[in-house]
Amino acid sequence: MYRTHNCGELRLSDLNKEVVLSGWVHKSRDKGFLVWIDLRDRYGVLQLIFDEKRSSKDLIKNAKELGREYVIQVTGKVIERSSKNTNIPTGEIEILVSKLKTLNSSKVPPFTIENKTDGGEELRMKYRYLDIRRNSIKDKLIFRNKVSSEIRKYLNDLNFIDVETPCLIKSTPEGARDFIVPSRMNSGEFYALPQSPQTFKQLLMVGGLDRYFQIVKCFRDEDLRSDRQPEFTQIDCEMSFVNQDDVLNTFEGLTKHLLKTIKNVKVDKFPRITYEDAIAKYGSDKPDIRFSMEFGELNSIAQHKDFNIFNSAELVVGISVPNGNDFTRKEIDKYIEWVKRPQIGANGIVYVRCNEDGAYKSSVDKFYDQKDFSNWAKNTGANKGDLIFIMSGDKDEVRNQLGELRLEIAENIGLRNPNEFAPLWVTDFPLLKWDEQSASFHAMHHPFTSPKLDQLDLLKSNPREVKANAYDLVLNGNEIGGGSIRIHDKNIQSLMFKHLGFSEKQAKEQFGFLMNAFEYGAPPHGGIALGLDRLVAILDGNESIKDYIAFPKNNSGKDIMIDAPSSISKEQLDELSLSLKK
Ligand code: ASP
Image 1 (cartoon, protein in one colour):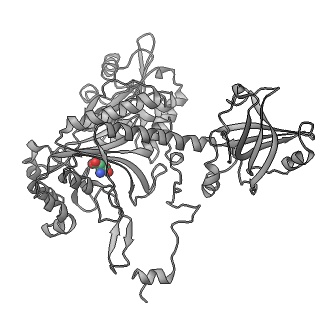
Image 2 (tube, protein in one colour):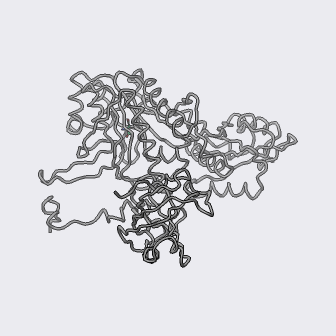
Image 3 (cartoon, helix red, strand yellow):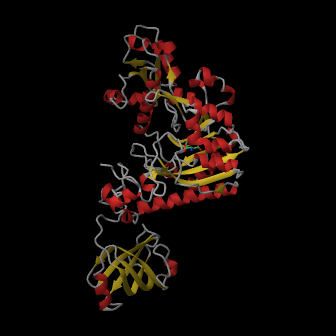
Protein backbone atom coordinates (compact mmCIF):
# COMPACT_ATOMS: atom_id res chain seq x y z
CA MET A 1 0.00 0.00 0.00
CA TYR A 2 1.40 3.37 -0.98
CA ARG A 3 -0.63 5.38 1.49
CA THR A 4 -3.24 5.22 4.21
CA HIS A 5 -3.99 8.95 4.00
CA ASN A 6 -3.31 11.84 1.67
CA CYS A 7 -1.28 14.91 2.63
CA GLY A 8 -4.26 17.15 3.27
CA GLU A 9 -6.55 15.22 5.56
CA LEU A 10 -4.80 14.52 8.87
CA ARG A 11 -5.76 16.66 11.91
CA LEU A 12 -5.20 16.81 15.68
CA SER A 13 -8.01 14.31 16.05
CA ASP A 14 -5.77 11.74 14.33
CA LEU A 15 -3.09 11.96 17.07
CA ASN A 16 -0.99 8.83 17.57
CA LYS A 17 -2.25 7.12 14.42
CA GLU A 18 0.32 5.09 12.49
CA VAL A 19 0.10 6.33 8.92
CA VAL A 20 1.70 5.73 5.53
CA LEU A 21 1.99 8.70 3.19
CA SER A 22 3.33 9.30 -0.30
CA GLY A 23 4.07 12.54 -2.07
CA TRP A 24 6.63 15.06 -3.26
CA VAL A 25 9.32 16.75 -1.19
CA HIS A 26 8.14 20.33 -1.22
CA LYS A 27 10.71 21.86 1.11
CA SER A 28 13.18 20.67 3.68
CA ARG A 29 14.85 22.29 6.68
CA ASP A 30 17.95 20.72 8.19
CA LYS A 31 18.76 21.53 11.81
CA GLY A 32 21.53 18.91 12.21
CA PHE A 33 19.92 16.33 14.45
CA LEU A 34 16.43 17.35 13.26
CA VAL A 35 15.11 17.46 9.70
CA TRP A 36 11.71 18.76 8.70
CA ILE A 37 10.22 18.03 5.32
CA ASP A 38 7.03 19.42 3.84
CA LEU A 39 5.40 16.57 1.95
CA ARG A 40 2.98 17.62 -0.79
CA ASP A 41 0.34 15.98 -2.91
CA ARG A 42 -2.80 17.20 -4.67
CA TYR A 43 -4.66 17.43 -1.37
CA GLY A 44 -2.26 19.52 0.65
CA VAL A 45 1.01 19.81 2.51
CA LEU A 46 1.99 17.99 5.66
CA GLN A 47 5.06 18.37 7.86
CA LEU A 48 7.30 15.34 8.42
CA ILE A 49 9.83 15.33 11.23
CA PHE A 50 12.95 13.19 11.30
CA ASP A 51 14.53 13.19 14.76
CA GLU A 52 17.84 11.53 15.45
CA LYS A 53 16.86 10.97 19.10
CA ARG A 54 13.58 9.31 18.32
CA SER A 55 14.68 7.24 15.31
CA SER A 56 17.79 5.86 13.67
CA LYS A 57 20.84 7.82 12.45
CA ASP A 58 20.50 6.20 9.04
CA LEU A 59 17.00 7.50 8.63
CA ILE A 60 18.02 11.09 9.25
CA LYS A 61 21.00 10.68 6.94
CA ASN A 62 18.70 9.49 4.17
CA ALA A 63 16.28 12.35 4.85
CA LYS A 64 19.11 14.86 4.44
CA GLU A 65 19.82 13.49 0.98
CA LEU A 66 16.34 14.10 -0.36
CA GLY A 67 16.11 16.84 -2.96
CA ARG A 68 13.20 19.05 -3.94
CA GLU A 69 10.47 17.16 -5.82
CA TYR A 70 11.76 13.71 -4.90
CA VAL A 71 8.86 11.28 -4.63
CA ILE A 72 8.89 9.52 -1.28
CA GLN A 73 6.89 7.20 0.89
CA VAL A 74 7.02 7.44 4.67
CA THR A 75 5.61 5.55 7.61
CA GLY A 76 5.18 7.37 10.90
CA LYS A 77 3.05 8.52 13.79
CA VAL A 78 0.83 11.58 13.96
CA ILE A 79 2.09 13.86 16.76
CA GLU A 80 1.21 17.36 17.91
CA ARG A 81 3.45 20.15 16.67
CA SER A 82 5.16 22.29 19.21
CA SER A 83 4.96 25.39 17.01
CA LYS A 84 1.72 25.33 15.06
CA ASN A 85 1.12 26.75 11.59
CA THR A 86 -2.35 28.22 11.40
CA ASN A 87 -2.04 28.91 7.68
CA ILE A 88 -2.55 25.31 6.58
CA PRO A 89 -5.25 22.81 7.60
CA THR A 90 -2.68 20.22 8.73
CA GLY A 91 -0.69 22.86 10.64
CA GLU A 92 -1.34 21.53 14.13
CA ILE A 93 0.29 18.15 13.59
CA GLU A 94 3.38 16.56 12.11
CA ILE A 95 4.44 13.01 11.30
CA LEU A 96 7.29 11.53 13.30
CA VAL A 97 8.83 9.38 10.60
CA SER A 98 10.02 5.86 11.33
CA LYS A 99 10.49 4.59 7.78
CA LEU A 100 11.47 6.35 4.55
CA LYS A 101 11.51 5.03 1.02
CA THR A 102 12.51 7.01 -2.04
CA LEU A 103 10.08 6.15 -4.83
CA ASN A 104 11.76 8.38 -7.38
CA SER A 105 14.40 11.07 -7.55
CA SER A 106 14.00 14.40 -9.33
CA LYS A 107 16.22 16.88 -11.06
CA VAL A 108 16.13 20.34 -9.54
CA PRO A 109 13.02 21.87 -11.10
CA PRO A 110 13.65 24.86 -13.41
CA PHE A 111 11.36 27.09 -11.33
CA THR A 112 10.02 27.02 -7.80
CA ILE A 113 6.83 25.04 -7.21
CA GLU A 114 5.22 27.82 -5.19
CA ASN A 115 2.13 29.97 -5.62
CA LYS A 116 4.39 32.85 -6.53
CA THR A 117 6.95 31.21 -8.76
CA ASP A 118 10.12 32.60 -10.28
CA GLY A 119 9.38 30.94 -13.67
CA GLY A 120 8.36 33.01 -16.68
CA GLU A 121 5.40 31.97 -18.82
CA GLU A 122 7.32 30.21 -21.59
CA LEU A 123 9.40 28.22 -19.12
CA ARG A 124 6.32 27.20 -17.19
CA MET A 125 4.61 26.12 -20.39
CA LYS A 126 7.59 24.03 -21.41
CA TYR A 127 7.39 22.22 -18.07
CA ARG A 128 3.63 22.40 -17.75
CA TYR A 129 3.51 19.17 -15.70
CA LEU A 130 5.57 20.95 -13.03
CA ASP A 131 3.45 24.06 -13.30
CA ILE A 132 0.38 21.92 -12.65
CA ARG A 133 1.94 20.91 -9.32
CA ARG A 134 1.58 24.53 -8.18
CA ASN A 135 -1.62 25.29 -6.28
CA SER A 136 -2.45 28.23 -8.49
CA ILE A 137 -2.74 26.04 -11.60
CA LYS A 138 -3.94 22.86 -9.91
CA ASP A 139 -6.77 24.67 -8.14
CA LYS A 140 -7.93 26.17 -11.43
CA LEU A 141 -8.13 22.76 -13.08
CA ILE A 142 -10.06 21.42 -10.09
CA PHE A 143 -12.34 24.45 -10.29
CA ARG A 144 -12.94 23.76 -13.97
CA ASN A 145 -13.92 20.20 -13.13
CA LYS A 146 -16.36 21.46 -10.52
CA VAL A 147 -18.03 23.70 -13.10
CA SER A 148 -18.15 21.06 -15.83
CA SER A 149 -19.56 18.40 -13.53
CA GLU A 150 -22.29 20.81 -12.34
CA ILE A 151 -23.11 21.48 -15.99
CA ARG A 152 -23.40 17.76 -16.75
CA LYS A 153 -25.58 17.21 -13.71
CA TYR A 154 -27.89 20.08 -14.56
CA LEU A 155 -28.32 19.14 -18.21
CA ASN A 156 -28.72 15.44 -17.46
CA ASP A 157 -31.51 16.28 -15.03
CA LEU A 158 -33.24 18.16 -17.83
CA ASN A 159 -33.07 15.12 -20.11
CA PHE A 160 -30.24 16.35 -22.31
CA ILE A 161 -28.15 13.47 -23.55
CA ASP A 162 -24.44 13.62 -24.13
CA VAL A 163 -23.63 12.52 -27.68
CA GLU A 164 -20.17 12.53 -29.22
CA THR A 165 -19.89 13.92 -32.73
CA PRO A 166 -16.97 13.26 -35.06
CA CYS A 167 -13.76 15.29 -35.24
CA LEU A 168 -12.78 14.34 -38.78
CA ILE A 169 -15.42 16.15 -40.76
CA LYS A 170 -16.09 18.58 -43.55
CA SER A 171 -15.96 22.30 -43.00
CA THR A 172 -18.61 23.83 -40.72
CA PRO A 173 -18.80 27.53 -41.37
CA GLU A 174 -18.52 29.46 -38.12
CA GLY A 175 -16.64 32.27 -39.78
CA ALA A 176 -13.10 31.13 -39.03
CA ARG A 177 -10.53 29.19 -41.02
CA ASP A 178 -10.54 25.38 -40.75
CA PHE A 179 -7.74 23.21 -39.48
CA ILE A 180 -7.21 20.65 -42.21
CA VAL A 181 -6.22 17.00 -41.90
CA PRO A 182 -4.98 15.19 -45.00
CA SER A 183 -6.40 11.75 -45.67
CA ARG A 184 -3.88 9.00 -46.39
CA MET A 185 -6.44 6.54 -47.64
CA ASN A 186 -8.07 9.04 -49.93
CA SER A 187 -5.11 10.60 -51.58
CA GLY A 188 -5.41 14.35 -52.23
CA GLU A 189 -8.48 14.65 -50.02
CA PHE A 190 -8.84 16.36 -46.68
CA TYR A 191 -10.90 16.39 -43.54
CA ALA A 192 -11.57 19.57 -41.59
CA LEU A 193 -11.59 19.64 -37.80
CA PRO A 194 -14.91 20.96 -36.50
CA GLN A 195 -15.18 24.68 -35.80
CA SER A 196 -18.23 23.46 -33.91
CA PRO A 197 -20.52 20.40 -34.09
CA GLN A 198 -23.22 22.68 -35.53
CA THR A 199 -24.48 20.56 -38.41
CA PHE A 200 -24.22 17.31 -36.45
CA LYS A 201 -26.27 18.58 -33.56
CA GLN A 202 -28.94 19.69 -36.00
CA LEU A 203 -28.88 16.24 -37.57
CA LEU A 204 -29.31 14.72 -34.10
CA MET A 205 -32.52 16.74 -33.85
CA VAL A 206 -33.65 15.35 -37.21
CA GLY A 207 -32.73 11.98 -35.68
CA GLY A 208 -35.28 12.63 -32.94
CA LEU A 209 -32.91 12.84 -29.95
CA ASP A 210 -34.78 15.96 -28.80
CA ARG A 211 -32.17 17.32 -26.36
CA TYR A 212 -28.43 17.03 -26.95
CA PHE A 213 -25.38 18.36 -25.20
CA GLN A 214 -21.68 17.78 -25.43
CA ILE A 215 -18.68 19.33 -23.73
CA VAL A 216 -16.60 19.33 -26.83
CA LYS A 217 -13.35 20.54 -28.34
CA CYS A 218 -13.71 22.94 -31.28
CA PHE A 219 -10.95 24.09 -33.58
CA ARG A 220 -10.59 27.46 -35.29
CA ASP A 221 -7.53 28.58 -37.17
CA GLU A 222 -7.79 32.26 -36.33
CA ASP A 223 -5.15 34.85 -35.75
CA LEU A 224 -4.42 34.52 -32.08
CA ARG A 225 -5.31 37.10 -29.51
CA SER A 226 -3.97 36.73 -26.03
CA ASP A 227 -7.22 35.25 -24.85
CA ARG A 228 -7.96 32.88 -27.70
CA GLN A 229 -6.83 29.32 -28.18
CA PRO A 230 -6.87 27.46 -31.51
CA GLU A 231 -8.61 24.58 -29.75
CA PHE A 232 -11.14 25.41 -27.11
CA THR A 233 -14.07 23.80 -25.36
CA GLN A 234 -17.74 24.47 -25.88
CA ILE A 235 -20.76 23.37 -23.93
CA ASP A 236 -22.70 22.63 -27.09
CA CYS A 237 -26.45 22.17 -26.86
CA GLU A 238 -29.47 21.71 -29.10
CA MET A 239 -33.19 21.30 -28.41
CA SER A 240 -36.21 20.35 -30.52
CA PHE A 241 -39.67 21.92 -30.50
CA VAL A 242 -38.46 25.12 -28.88
CA ASN A 243 -38.76 28.81 -29.52
CA GLN A 244 -36.26 31.44 -28.50
CA ASP A 245 -37.78 31.91 -25.04
CA ASP A 246 -37.50 28.19 -24.31
CA VAL A 247 -33.79 28.18 -25.09
CA LEU A 248 -33.08 31.39 -23.17
CA ASN A 249 -34.98 30.19 -20.10
CA THR A 250 -33.18 26.83 -20.09
CA PHE A 251 -29.70 28.33 -20.27
CA GLU A 252 -30.54 31.18 -17.94
CA GLY A 253 -31.45 28.38 -15.54
CA LEU A 254 -28.10 26.69 -16.09
CA THR A 255 -26.15 29.92 -15.60
CA LYS A 256 -28.09 30.75 -12.43
CA HIS A 257 -27.47 27.24 -11.14
CA LEU A 258 -23.72 27.65 -11.70
CA LEU A 259 -23.62 31.06 -10.03
CA LYS A 260 -25.52 29.66 -7.05
CA THR A 261 -23.65 26.37 -6.61
CA ILE A 262 -20.18 27.58 -7.53
CA LYS A 263 -20.19 31.17 -6.27
CA ASN A 264 -23.17 31.23 -3.91
CA VAL A 265 -24.44 34.24 -5.83
CA LYS A 266 -28.13 34.68 -6.54
CA VAL A 267 -29.06 36.70 -9.61
CA ASP A 268 -32.48 37.91 -10.70
CA LYS A 269 -33.98 37.37 -14.10
CA PHE A 270 -31.38 38.27 -16.72
CA PRO A 271 -32.09 41.51 -18.57
CA ARG A 272 -32.74 41.06 -22.29
CA ILE A 273 -31.65 43.79 -24.61
CA THR A 274 -31.66 43.92 -28.40
CA TYR A 275 -28.42 44.16 -30.32
CA GLU A 276 -29.43 47.60 -31.57
CA ASP A 277 -30.05 48.90 -28.06
CA ALA A 278 -26.83 47.37 -26.75
CA ILE A 279 -24.82 49.19 -29.39
CA ALA A 280 -26.71 52.46 -28.85
CA LYS A 281 -26.45 52.33 -25.03
CA TYR A 282 -23.05 50.78 -24.47
CA GLY A 283 -21.26 50.84 -27.83
CA SER A 284 -20.85 47.07 -27.60
CA ASP A 285 -22.81 43.90 -28.31
CA LYS A 286 -21.39 42.43 -25.11
CA PRO A 287 -21.97 45.20 -22.61
CA ASP A 288 -20.61 45.08 -19.11
CA ILE A 289 -23.61 46.06 -17.00
CA ARG A 290 -22.02 45.68 -13.60
CA PHE A 291 -22.06 49.47 -13.74
CA SER A 292 -24.30 51.96 -15.51
CA MET A 293 -22.55 54.75 -17.46
CA GLU A 294 -25.08 54.42 -20.28
CA PHE A 295 -24.66 56.54 -23.37
CA GLY A 296 -26.73 59.70 -23.70
CA GLU A 297 -27.21 60.91 -27.26
CA LEU A 298 -26.91 64.66 -27.51
CA ASN A 299 -27.46 65.57 -31.18
CA SER A 300 -30.64 67.56 -30.59
CA ILE A 301 -29.18 69.52 -27.67
CA ALA A 302 -25.60 69.98 -28.86
CA GLN A 303 -25.85 70.85 -32.53
CA HIS A 304 -27.55 74.23 -32.18
CA LYS A 305 -24.51 76.42 -31.50
CA ASP A 306 -21.40 77.35 -33.46
CA PHE A 307 -19.32 74.39 -32.42
CA ASN A 308 -18.45 72.89 -35.75
CA ILE A 309 -16.98 69.64 -34.51
CA PHE A 310 -20.36 68.68 -33.05
CA ASN A 311 -22.40 70.22 -35.85
CA SER A 312 -20.68 68.20 -38.54
CA ALA A 313 -20.86 64.90 -36.65
CA GLU A 314 -23.30 62.13 -37.38
CA LEU A 315 -23.54 61.40 -33.65
CA VAL A 316 -22.72 63.39 -30.51
CA VAL A 317 -22.81 61.09 -27.52
CA GLY A 318 -21.70 61.25 -23.90
CA ILE A 319 -21.31 59.28 -20.70
CA SER A 320 -21.30 60.35 -17.11
CA VAL A 321 -18.40 59.23 -14.96
CA PRO A 322 -19.56 58.80 -11.36
CA ASN A 323 -17.59 61.14 -9.08
CA GLY A 324 -15.50 62.04 -12.12
CA ASN A 325 -15.34 65.68 -11.05
CA ASP A 326 -12.58 64.48 -8.73
CA PHE A 327 -10.39 63.76 -11.77
CA THR A 328 -7.47 66.14 -12.03
CA ARG A 329 -6.82 67.97 -15.28
CA LYS A 330 -3.93 65.60 -15.78
CA GLU A 331 -6.16 62.56 -15.44
CA ILE A 332 -8.63 63.97 -17.94
CA ASP A 333 -5.79 64.68 -20.37
CA LYS A 334 -4.63 61.10 -19.96
CA TYR A 335 -8.02 59.85 -21.15
CA ILE A 336 -7.94 62.29 -24.06
CA GLU A 337 -4.55 60.90 -25.07
CA TRP A 338 -5.84 57.36 -24.52
CA VAL A 339 -8.67 57.75 -27.05
CA LYS A 340 -6.27 59.29 -29.57
CA ARG A 341 -4.11 56.16 -29.64
CA PRO A 342 -4.36 54.37 -32.99
CA GLN A 343 -6.09 51.40 -31.33
CA ILE A 344 -9.03 53.68 -30.49
CA GLY A 345 -8.52 56.30 -33.19
CA ALA A 346 -10.68 59.14 -31.84
CA ASN A 347 -9.94 62.85 -32.25
CA GLY A 348 -10.50 63.80 -28.65
CA ILE A 349 -13.00 64.25 -25.86
CA VAL A 350 -15.12 67.20 -24.79
CA TYR A 351 -15.66 67.23 -21.04
CA VAL A 352 -18.04 68.91 -18.64
CA ARG A 353 -17.36 69.03 -14.90
CA CYS A 354 -20.48 68.94 -12.75
CA ASN A 355 -19.46 70.90 -9.68
CA GLU A 356 -20.89 70.27 -6.24
CA ASP A 357 -22.43 73.78 -6.22
CA GLY A 358 -24.50 72.95 -9.32
CA ALA A 359 -22.37 74.93 -11.78
CA TYR A 360 -20.80 73.36 -14.86
CA LYS A 361 -17.30 73.93 -16.17
CA SER A 362 -16.34 72.57 -19.54
CA SER A 363 -13.79 72.49 -22.31
CA VAL A 364 -16.38 74.12 -24.61
CA ASP A 365 -17.50 77.00 -22.35
CA LYS A 366 -16.94 79.33 -25.31
CA PHE A 367 -19.78 77.74 -27.27
CA TYR A 368 -22.36 76.54 -24.77
CA ASP A 369 -24.08 77.89 -21.67
CA GLN A 370 -25.11 76.43 -18.31
CA LYS A 371 -28.58 75.54 -19.66
CA ASP A 372 -26.99 73.44 -22.43
CA PHE A 373 -24.77 71.64 -19.93
CA SER A 374 -27.70 70.98 -17.67
CA ASN A 375 -29.53 69.34 -20.60
CA TRP A 376 -26.49 67.23 -21.38
CA ALA A 377 -26.28 66.20 -17.75
CA LYS A 378 -29.91 65.12 -17.87
CA ASN A 379 -29.35 63.00 -21.00
CA THR A 380 -26.25 61.29 -19.68
CA GLY A 381 -27.62 60.86 -16.15
CA ALA A 382 -24.88 63.03 -14.62
CA ASN A 383 -25.28 64.36 -11.08
CA LYS A 384 -23.35 66.89 -9.03
CA GLY A 385 -19.81 65.64 -8.60
CA ASP A 386 -19.81 63.68 -11.87
CA LEU A 387 -17.93 64.31 -15.08
CA ILE A 388 -19.41 64.11 -18.58
CA PHE A 389 -17.20 62.87 -21.40
CA ILE A 390 -18.52 63.55 -24.89
CA MET A 391 -17.34 62.23 -28.22
CA SER A 392 -18.59 62.86 -31.72
CA GLY A 393 -18.16 61.58 -35.26
CA ASP A 394 -19.32 58.75 -37.48
CA LYS A 395 -22.07 56.88 -35.60
CA ASP A 396 -20.60 53.38 -35.64
CA GLU A 397 -17.08 54.57 -34.97
CA VAL A 398 -17.89 56.92 -32.15
CA ARG A 399 -20.08 54.37 -30.37
CA ASN A 400 -17.29 51.89 -30.51
CA GLN A 401 -14.75 54.42 -29.24
CA LEU A 402 -16.92 55.62 -26.38
CA GLY A 403 -17.68 51.97 -25.53
CA GLU A 404 -13.95 51.33 -25.14
CA LEU A 405 -13.50 54.47 -23.07
CA ARG A 406 -16.42 53.44 -20.84
CA LEU A 407 -14.70 50.13 -20.05
CA GLU A 408 -11.29 51.72 -19.53
CA ILE A 409 -12.63 54.26 -17.04
CA ALA A 410 -14.74 51.68 -15.23
CA GLU A 411 -11.68 49.45 -14.89
CA ASN A 412 -9.59 52.30 -13.53
CA ILE A 413 -12.14 53.51 -11.00
CA GLY A 414 -12.86 50.01 -9.73
CA LEU A 415 -16.32 49.41 -11.19
CA ARG A 416 -15.42 46.04 -12.72
CA ASN A 417 -15.47 43.93 -9.61
CA PRO A 418 -14.63 40.32 -10.55
CA ASN A 419 -16.75 39.02 -7.68
CA GLU A 420 -19.87 40.67 -8.98
CA PHE A 421 -21.83 38.95 -11.74
CA ALA A 422 -24.09 40.73 -14.20
CA PRO A 423 -25.38 38.39 -16.92
CA LEU A 424 -27.71 39.46 -19.72
CA TRP A 425 -29.08 38.30 -23.04
CA VAL A 426 -28.47 40.24 -26.22
CA THR A 427 -31.08 39.34 -28.85
CA ASP A 428 -32.19 40.22 -32.37
CA PHE A 429 -28.78 40.27 -34.01
CA PRO A 430 -28.69 41.24 -37.67
CA LEU A 431 -28.90 38.15 -39.87
CA LEU A 432 -26.19 39.27 -42.27
CA LYS A 433 -23.12 41.42 -42.26
CA TRP A 434 -21.46 42.96 -45.26
CA ASP A 435 -17.93 41.80 -45.90
CA GLU A 436 -15.91 44.44 -47.73
CA GLN A 437 -13.17 42.06 -48.76
CA SER A 438 -15.35 39.55 -50.58
CA ALA A 439 -17.99 42.19 -51.40
CA SER A 440 -20.73 39.86 -50.24
CA PHE A 441 -22.96 39.20 -47.26
CA HIS A 442 -21.82 36.77 -44.58
CA ALA A 443 -23.96 35.20 -41.91
CA MET A 444 -23.48 37.15 -38.70
CA HIS A 445 -23.95 33.96 -36.64
CA HIS A 446 -23.85 31.05 -39.11
CA PRO A 447 -25.84 30.14 -42.23
CA PHE A 448 -28.22 27.83 -40.35
CA THR A 449 -29.65 30.63 -38.22
CA SER A 450 -33.27 31.45 -38.88
CA PRO A 451 -34.21 34.95 -39.95
CA LYS A 452 -37.20 36.46 -38.17
CA LEU A 453 -39.80 34.77 -40.31
CA ASP A 454 -41.95 37.89 -40.67
CA GLN A 455 -38.97 39.63 -42.26
CA LEU A 456 -38.33 37.10 -45.02
CA ASP A 457 -39.55 39.57 -47.65
CA LEU A 458 -36.91 42.06 -46.57
CA LEU A 459 -34.19 39.58 -47.55
CA LYS A 460 -34.56 40.70 -51.14
CA SER A 461 -35.26 44.40 -50.72
CA ASN A 462 -33.15 45.34 -47.69
CA PRO A 463 -31.05 42.41 -46.45
CA ARG A 464 -29.11 44.55 -43.94
CA GLU A 465 -32.29 45.19 -42.00
CA VAL A 466 -33.24 41.54 -41.53
CA LYS A 467 -32.91 40.37 -37.94
CA ALA A 468 -32.04 36.85 -36.90
CA ASN A 469 -33.51 34.66 -34.20
CA ALA A 470 -30.06 34.75 -32.65
CA TYR A 471 -28.93 35.55 -29.14
CA ASP A 472 -25.79 35.88 -27.06
CA LEU A 473 -25.30 35.28 -23.38
CA VAL A 474 -23.06 37.99 -21.95
CA LEU A 475 -21.40 37.97 -18.55
CA ASN A 476 -19.39 40.90 -17.19
CA GLY A 477 -18.61 42.26 -20.63
CA ASN A 478 -17.70 38.90 -22.16
CA GLU A 479 -19.66 36.92 -24.68
CA ILE A 480 -19.87 33.54 -23.01
CA GLY A 481 -22.37 31.94 -25.35
CA GLY A 482 -24.27 32.32 -28.54
CA GLY A 483 -26.96 30.47 -30.39
CA SER A 484 -30.04 30.69 -32.50
CA ILE A 485 -33.28 29.16 -33.61
CA ARG A 486 -32.37 27.27 -36.75
CA ILE A 487 -33.84 27.08 -40.17
CA HIS A 488 -35.60 23.70 -40.49
CA ASP A 489 -37.25 24.30 -43.83
CA LYS A 490 -35.34 23.27 -46.93
CA ASN A 491 -36.60 26.16 -49.01
CA ILE A 492 -35.66 28.81 -46.48
CA GLN A 493 -32.24 27.19 -46.08
CA SER A 494 -31.74 27.32 -49.87
CA LEU A 495 -32.80 30.95 -49.89
CA MET A 496 -30.29 31.68 -47.14
CA PHE A 497 -27.45 30.02 -49.06
CA LYS A 498 -28.42 32.06 -52.09
CA HIS A 499 -28.19 35.30 -50.14
CA LEU A 500 -24.82 34.25 -48.82
CA GLY A 501 -23.56 33.99 -52.37
CA PHE A 502 -23.51 30.17 -52.68
CA SER A 503 -24.47 28.85 -56.08
CA GLU A 504 -26.91 25.95 -55.98
CA LYS A 505 -24.07 23.62 -56.87
CA GLN A 506 -21.80 24.93 -54.09
CA ALA A 507 -24.60 24.70 -51.52
CA LYS A 508 -25.29 21.14 -52.57
CA GLU A 509 -21.62 20.18 -52.47
CA GLN A 510 -21.04 21.62 -49.03
CA PHE A 511 -24.35 21.15 -47.28
CA GLY A 512 -26.29 18.69 -49.40
CA PHE A 513 -26.39 16.28 -46.45
CA LEU A 514 -28.23 18.84 -44.34
CA MET A 515 -30.61 19.86 -47.10
CA ASN A 516 -31.38 16.18 -47.68
CA ALA A 517 -32.06 15.67 -44.00
CA PHE A 518 -34.47 18.59 -44.08
CA GLU A 519 -36.55 16.60 -46.56
CA TYR A 520 -37.25 13.92 -43.96
CA GLY A 521 -39.23 15.72 -41.31
CA ALA A 522 -36.82 18.05 -39.52
CA PRO A 523 -38.42 19.33 -36.29
CA PRO A 524 -38.28 23.02 -35.38
CA HIS A 525 -35.13 23.32 -33.29
CA GLY A 526 -32.61 25.70 -31.78
CA GLY A 527 -29.65 25.76 -29.46
CA ILE A 528 -26.66 27.47 -28.05
CA ALA A 529 -22.99 26.91 -27.31
CA LEU A 530 -21.24 28.34 -24.28
CA GLY A 531 -17.46 28.75 -24.17
CA LEU A 532 -16.38 26.64 -21.22
CA ASP A 533 -12.83 28.00 -20.89
CA ARG A 534 -14.00 31.59 -20.62
CA LEU A 535 -17.03 30.80 -18.47
CA VAL A 536 -14.83 29.00 -15.96
CA ALA A 537 -12.28 31.82 -15.90
CA ILE A 538 -14.94 34.48 -15.32
CA LEU A 539 -16.67 32.47 -12.62
CA ASP A 540 -13.31 32.24 -10.90
CA GLY A 541 -12.85 36.02 -11.17
CA ASN A 542 -10.26 35.92 -13.94
CA GLU A 543 -10.21 37.03 -17.57
CA SER A 544 -7.30 34.96 -18.80
CA ILE A 545 -8.33 31.48 -19.95
CA LYS A 546 -4.88 29.89 -20.30
CA ASP A 547 -4.49 28.68 -16.75
CA TYR A 548 -7.85 26.93 -16.90
CA ILE A 549 -6.63 24.75 -19.75
CA ALA A 550 -4.33 21.92 -18.72
CA PHE A 551 -2.08 22.16 -21.77
CA PRO A 552 -2.65 25.47 -23.55
CA LYS A 553 -0.92 26.74 -26.68
CA ASN A 554 1.23 29.85 -26.53
CA ASN A 555 0.43 33.09 -28.34
CA SER A 556 1.81 31.76 -31.62
CA GLY A 557 -0.42 28.69 -31.43
CA LYS A 558 2.42 26.40 -30.36
CA ASP A 559 2.66 23.78 -27.68
CA ILE A 560 6.26 24.31 -26.68
CA MET A 561 6.28 21.35 -24.33
CA ILE A 562 5.66 18.73 -27.01
CA ASP A 563 6.95 20.95 -29.82
CA ALA A 564 3.84 21.09 -31.96
CA PRO A 565 3.27 21.90 -34.69
CA SER A 566 6.45 20.43 -36.12
CA SER A 567 7.66 19.18 -39.47
CA ILE A 568 7.07 15.59 -40.53
CA SER A 569 9.24 13.16 -42.43
CA LYS A 570 9.45 12.90 -46.20
CA GLU A 571 7.91 9.41 -45.93
CA GLN A 572 4.89 10.76 -44.09
CA LEU A 573 4.52 13.56 -46.61
CA ASP A 574 4.71 11.04 -49.47
CA GLU A 575 2.15 8.83 -47.84
CA LEU A 576 -0.21 11.78 -47.56
CA SER A 577 0.53 12.88 -51.14
CA LEU A 578 1.78 16.18 -49.73
CA SER A 579 5.37 16.16 -50.96
CA LEU A 580 6.32 19.32 -52.72
CA LYS A 581 6.66 18.61 -56.42
CA LYS A 582 9.94 19.76 -57.89
N1 ASP B 1 -22.33 26.60 -33.32
C1 ASP B 1 -22.50 27.90 -32.75
C2 ASP B 1 -21.13 28.47 -32.36
O1 ASP B 1 -20.17 27.73 -32.24
C3 ASP B 1 -23.37 27.91 -31.55
C4 ASP B 1 -24.79 27.62 -31.86
O2 ASP B 1 -25.36 28.26 -32.76
O3 ASP B 1 -25.36 26.78 -31.16
O4 ASP B 1 -21.02 29.65 -32.13
